[in-house]
Image 1 (cartoon, rainbow, N blue to C red):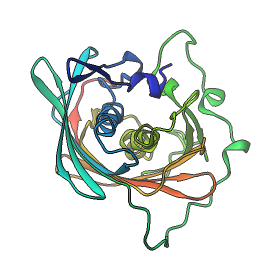
Image 2: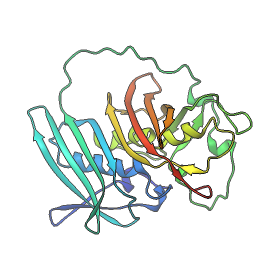
Image 3: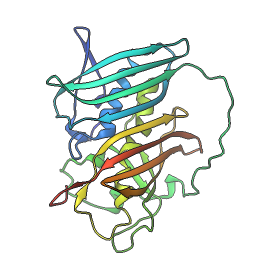
Image 4: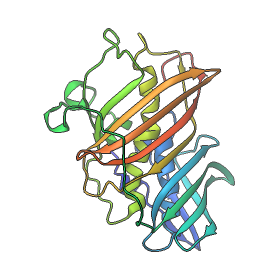
Length: 274
Protein backbone atom coordinates (compact mmCIF):
# COMPACT_ATOMS: atom_id res chain seq x y z
CA UNK A 1 0.00 0.00 0.00
CA UNK A 2 1.31 3.42 -0.92
CA UNK A 3 1.08 6.59 1.11
CA UNK A 4 -0.07 9.62 -0.84
CA UNK A 5 2.14 12.10 1.00
CA UNK A 6 5.25 9.98 0.39
CA UNK A 7 4.57 8.81 -3.16
CA UNK A 8 3.90 12.33 -4.48
CA UNK A 9 6.79 14.04 -2.67
CA UNK A 10 9.22 15.89 -4.93
CA UNK A 11 12.93 16.38 -4.29
CA UNK A 12 14.89 19.45 -5.33
CA UNK A 13 18.24 18.71 -6.94
CA UNK A 14 20.48 21.10 -8.88
CA UNK A 15 17.66 23.62 -9.13
CA UNK A 16 15.21 21.05 -10.55
CA UNK A 17 12.35 18.97 -9.10
CA UNK A 18 12.29 15.17 -9.30
CA UNK A 19 10.00 12.33 -8.22
CA UNK A 20 10.09 8.57 -8.75
CA UNK A 21 6.71 7.14 -9.74
CA UNK A 22 5.60 4.41 -7.33
CA UNK A 23 4.42 0.96 -8.47
CA UNK A 24 1.78 1.11 -5.73
CA UNK A 25 -0.26 3.38 -8.04
CA UNK A 26 -0.22 1.05 -11.02
CA UNK A 27 -3.51 0.74 -12.93
CA UNK A 28 -3.06 0.57 -16.73
CA UNK A 29 0.30 2.19 -15.87
CA UNK A 30 0.74 5.02 -13.36
CA UNK A 31 -2.74 6.17 -12.32
CA UNK A 32 -3.74 9.46 -13.92
CA UNK A 33 -4.98 11.03 -10.71
CA UNK A 34 -1.75 10.05 -9.00
CA UNK A 35 0.51 11.75 -11.56
CA UNK A 36 -1.85 14.74 -11.65
CA UNK A 37 -1.41 14.98 -7.87
CA UNK A 38 2.35 15.16 -8.38
CA UNK A 39 1.87 18.05 -10.82
CA UNK A 40 -0.38 19.79 -8.30
CA UNK A 41 2.23 19.48 -5.57
CA UNK A 42 4.95 20.70 -7.95
CA UNK A 43 2.93 23.87 -8.56
CA UNK A 44 2.58 24.30 -4.83
CA UNK A 45 6.35 24.30 -4.44
CA UNK A 46 6.67 27.53 -6.44
CA UNK A 47 3.38 29.22 -5.50
CA UNK A 48 3.62 32.08 -3.00
CA UNK A 49 3.23 31.34 0.70
CA UNK A 50 -0.41 31.38 1.74
CA UNK A 51 -1.71 30.27 -1.66
CA UNK A 52 -3.95 27.25 -2.16
CA UNK A 53 -5.00 25.54 -5.41
CA UNK A 54 -8.03 26.99 -7.17
CA UNK A 55 -8.12 24.64 -10.16
CA UNK A 56 -6.07 22.21 -12.22
CA UNK A 57 -6.42 21.19 -15.86
CA UNK A 58 -4.42 18.14 -16.92
CA UNK A 59 -3.65 16.60 -20.31
CA UNK A 60 -2.29 13.04 -20.35
CA UNK A 61 0.10 12.89 -23.31
CA UNK A 62 1.41 9.35 -22.84
CA UNK A 63 1.80 6.66 -20.19
CA UNK A 64 4.61 7.33 -17.75
CA UNK A 65 7.06 4.73 -16.48
CA UNK A 66 7.73 3.72 -12.89
CA UNK A 67 11.01 5.56 -12.76
CA UNK A 68 12.38 9.00 -11.97
CA UNK A 69 10.56 11.95 -13.54
CA UNK A 70 11.37 15.63 -13.68
CA UNK A 71 8.69 18.22 -12.92
CA UNK A 72 9.25 21.33 -15.03
CA UNK A 73 7.37 24.20 -13.38
CA UNK A 74 6.79 27.62 -14.96
CA UNK A 75 4.74 30.44 -13.43
CA UNK A 76 3.10 32.20 -16.39
CA UNK A 77 0.92 34.68 -14.47
CA UNK A 78 2.01 36.20 -11.18
CA UNK A 79 -0.81 38.40 -9.98
CA UNK A 80 -1.31 40.04 -6.61
CA UNK A 81 -3.78 37.37 -5.45
CA UNK A 82 -3.75 34.69 -8.19
CA UNK A 83 -0.98 32.80 -9.97
CA UNK A 84 -1.17 30.57 -13.05
CA UNK A 85 1.50 27.87 -13.13
CA UNK A 86 2.30 25.44 -15.95
CA UNK A 87 3.71 22.02 -15.02
CA UNK A 88 5.15 19.29 -17.24
CA UNK A 89 6.22 15.83 -16.07
CA UNK A 90 9.11 14.59 -18.18
CA UNK A 91 10.92 11.25 -18.57
CA UNK A 92 13.82 10.74 -20.98
CA UNK A 93 13.30 14.19 -22.46
CA UNK A 94 9.65 13.43 -23.31
CA UNK A 95 6.73 14.98 -21.45
CA UNK A 96 3.97 12.54 -20.54
CA UNK A 97 1.77 15.02 -18.66
CA UNK A 98 1.14 18.72 -18.86
CA UNK A 99 -1.01 20.73 -16.49
CA UNK A 100 -2.08 24.24 -15.68
CA UNK A 101 -2.73 25.17 -12.06
CA UNK A 102 -4.37 28.33 -10.73
CA UNK A 103 -3.58 29.31 -7.15
CA UNK A 104 -4.92 32.06 -4.92
CA UNK A 105 -4.77 33.50 -1.42
CA UNK A 106 -8.10 35.32 -1.69
CA UNK A 107 -10.88 34.35 0.74
CA UNK A 108 -13.25 37.35 0.88
CA UNK A 109 -16.44 37.23 -1.20
CA UNK A 110 -19.89 35.65 -1.37
CA UNK A 111 -20.54 32.32 0.30
CA UNK A 112 -23.41 30.42 -1.34
CA UNK A 113 -24.04 26.83 -2.42
CA UNK A 114 -27.30 25.61 -3.95
CA UNK A 115 -25.95 22.07 -4.35
CA UNK A 116 -26.75 19.40 -1.79
CA UNK A 117 -24.77 16.32 -0.86
CA UNK A 118 -26.49 13.07 -1.88
CA UNK A 119 -28.65 11.55 0.83
CA UNK A 120 -26.55 8.47 1.59
CA UNK A 121 -25.66 6.54 4.76
CA UNK A 122 -22.59 7.83 6.66
CA UNK A 123 -19.42 5.74 6.41
CA UNK A 124 -19.46 4.58 10.04
CA UNK A 125 -22.30 2.12 9.42
CA UNK A 126 -21.05 0.73 6.10
CA UNK A 127 -18.80 -2.21 5.24
CA UNK A 128 -15.56 -1.57 3.40
CA UNK A 129 -14.67 -3.22 0.10
CA UNK A 130 -12.02 -5.20 1.98
CA UNK A 131 -14.76 -6.63 4.19
CA UNK A 132 -17.08 -7.35 1.26
CA UNK A 133 -14.54 -8.91 -1.10
CA UNK A 134 -11.46 -11.01 -0.48
CA UNK A 135 -8.33 -11.50 -2.56
CA UNK A 136 -4.78 -12.76 -2.15
CA UNK A 137 -3.45 -10.84 0.85
CA UNK A 138 0.13 -10.71 -0.46
CA UNK A 139 -0.79 -9.34 -3.89
CA UNK A 140 -0.26 -5.59 -4.17
CA UNK A 141 -3.30 -3.80 -5.56
CA UNK A 142 -3.93 -0.22 -6.64
CA UNK A 143 -7.12 -0.08 -4.58
CA UNK A 144 -5.14 -0.73 -1.39
CA UNK A 145 -4.18 2.95 -1.52
CA UNK A 146 -7.74 3.74 -0.39
CA UNK A 147 -10.26 2.39 2.04
CA UNK A 148 -13.56 2.45 0.19
CA UNK A 149 -17.11 1.97 1.45
CA UNK A 150 -19.93 1.70 -1.11
CA UNK A 151 -23.27 3.14 -0.08
CA UNK A 152 -24.90 0.23 -1.90
CA UNK A 153 -23.46 -3.01 -3.29
CA UNK A 154 -24.06 -3.66 -7.00
CA UNK A 155 -23.14 -6.80 -8.96
CA UNK A 156 -23.17 -7.86 -12.60
CA UNK A 157 -26.28 -9.85 -11.82
CA UNK A 158 -27.89 -6.84 -10.12
CA UNK A 159 -26.24 -3.87 -11.84
CA UNK A 160 -26.71 -0.24 -10.99
CA UNK A 161 -29.34 1.22 -13.36
CA UNK A 162 -27.19 4.28 -14.12
CA UNK A 163 -23.51 4.99 -14.61
CA UNK A 164 -23.19 6.33 -11.10
CA UNK A 165 -20.97 5.89 -8.07
CA UNK A 166 -21.77 7.17 -4.61
CA UNK A 167 -19.20 5.85 -2.18
CA UNK A 168 -16.96 6.94 0.66
CA UNK A 169 -13.18 6.86 0.47
CA UNK A 170 -10.34 7.63 2.81
CA UNK A 171 -6.55 7.46 2.52
CA UNK A 172 -5.17 5.39 5.42
CA UNK A 173 -2.30 7.10 7.22
CA UNK A 174 -2.76 10.36 5.30
CA UNK A 175 -1.18 13.49 6.70
CA UNK A 176 -1.20 16.70 4.66
CA UNK A 177 1.30 18.30 7.01
CA UNK A 178 -0.33 21.68 6.43
CA UNK A 179 0.20 21.52 2.65
CA UNK A 180 -3.03 22.62 0.89
CA UNK A 181 -1.80 21.27 -2.47
CA UNK A 182 -1.28 17.80 -0.99
CA UNK A 183 -4.64 18.07 0.78
CA UNK A 184 -6.42 18.83 -2.52
CA UNK A 185 -4.72 15.83 -4.13
CA UNK A 186 -7.22 13.63 -2.30
CA UNK A 187 -10.35 14.74 -4.21
CA UNK A 188 -8.32 15.14 -7.41
CA UNK A 189 -7.37 11.44 -7.46
CA UNK A 190 -10.94 10.32 -6.74
CA UNK A 191 -12.39 12.52 -9.50
CA UNK A 192 -9.94 11.17 -12.08
CA UNK A 193 -10.04 7.52 -11.00
CA UNK A 194 -13.71 6.77 -10.42
CA UNK A 195 -15.13 7.90 -13.76
CA UNK A 196 -14.27 4.59 -15.45
CA UNK A 197 -15.82 2.40 -12.72
CA UNK A 198 -18.93 4.58 -12.88
CA UNK A 199 -19.18 4.01 -16.64
CA UNK A 200 -18.97 0.23 -16.49
CA UNK A 201 -21.06 -0.21 -13.33
CA UNK A 202 -24.42 -0.67 -15.17
CA UNK A 203 -22.94 -3.04 -17.79
CA UNK A 204 -23.97 -6.72 -17.54
CA UNK A 205 -20.37 -7.89 -18.04
CA UNK A 206 -16.90 -6.37 -17.98
CA UNK A 207 -16.40 -4.55 -21.31
CA UNK A 208 -13.88 -5.59 -23.98
CA UNK A 209 -12.32 -2.12 -23.89
CA UNK A 210 -10.65 0.20 -21.45
CA UNK A 211 -10.83 3.99 -21.39
CA UNK A 212 -7.72 5.88 -20.29
CA UNK A 213 -8.24 9.52 -19.45
CA UNK A 214 -7.30 12.09 -22.08
CA UNK A 215 -7.72 14.94 -19.62
CA UNK A 216 -9.18 15.94 -16.30
CA UNK A 217 -10.18 19.33 -14.93
CA UNK A 218 -10.92 19.92 -11.26
CA UNK A 219 -12.13 23.02 -9.42
CA UNK A 220 -11.41 23.19 -5.71
CA UNK A 221 -14.02 24.84 -3.50
CA UNK A 222 -12.72 24.08 0.00
CA UNK A 223 -9.80 22.32 1.60
CA UNK A 224 -10.63 18.87 3.01
CA UNK A 225 -8.69 19.79 6.14
CA UNK A 226 -9.53 17.40 8.97
CA UNK A 227 -12.11 15.52 6.84
CA UNK A 228 -11.14 11.84 6.86
CA UNK A 229 -13.88 10.23 4.76
CA UNK A 230 -14.69 11.83 1.39
CA UNK A 231 -17.90 11.10 -0.53
CA UNK A 232 -17.34 10.61 -4.27
CA UNK A 233 -20.49 11.41 -6.26
CA UNK A 234 -19.50 10.35 -9.77
CA UNK A 235 -21.47 10.09 -13.03
CA UNK A 236 -20.34 8.97 -16.47
CA UNK A 237 -23.61 9.52 -18.34
CA UNK A 238 -22.35 10.09 -21.87
CA UNK A 239 -20.48 7.82 -24.30
CA UNK A 240 -20.19 8.05 -28.07
CA UNK A 241 -17.81 8.52 -30.98
CA UNK A 242 -15.01 6.73 -29.14
CA UNK A 243 -15.22 8.93 -26.04
CA UNK A 244 -16.68 8.57 -22.54
CA UNK A 245 -17.46 11.67 -20.53
CA UNK A 246 -17.66 11.80 -16.76
CA UNK A 247 -18.22 14.38 -14.05
CA UNK A 248 -17.90 14.23 -10.29
CA UNK A 249 -18.32 16.04 -7.00
CA UNK A 250 -16.48 15.29 -3.77
CA UNK A 251 -17.99 16.09 -0.39
CA UNK A 252 -16.82 15.99 3.22
CA UNK A 253 -18.77 14.00 5.77
CA UNK A 254 -20.18 17.24 7.24
CA UNK A 255 -21.66 18.22 3.86
CA UNK A 256 -19.06 20.65 2.51
CA UNK A 257 -18.54 20.63 -1.25
CA UNK A 258 -14.79 20.18 -1.65
CA UNK A 259 -14.29 19.85 -5.41
CA UNK A 260 -15.99 19.30 -8.74
CA UNK A 261 -14.43 17.88 -11.87
CA UNK A 262 -14.88 16.45 -15.34
CA UNK A 263 -12.94 14.41 -17.88
CA UNK A 264 -12.95 12.69 -21.25
CA UNK A 265 -11.80 9.09 -21.61
CA UNK A 266 -10.68 7.47 -24.88
CA UNK A 267 -12.26 4.09 -25.70
CA UNK A 268 -9.44 1.61 -26.36
CA UNK A 269 -10.33 -1.97 -27.42
CA UNK A 270 -8.53 -4.73 -25.59
CA UNK A 271 -8.70 -8.50 -26.19
CA UNK A 272 -8.73 -9.28 -22.46
CA UNK A 273 -9.52 -7.63 -19.17
CA UNK A 274 -6.82 -5.13 -18.24
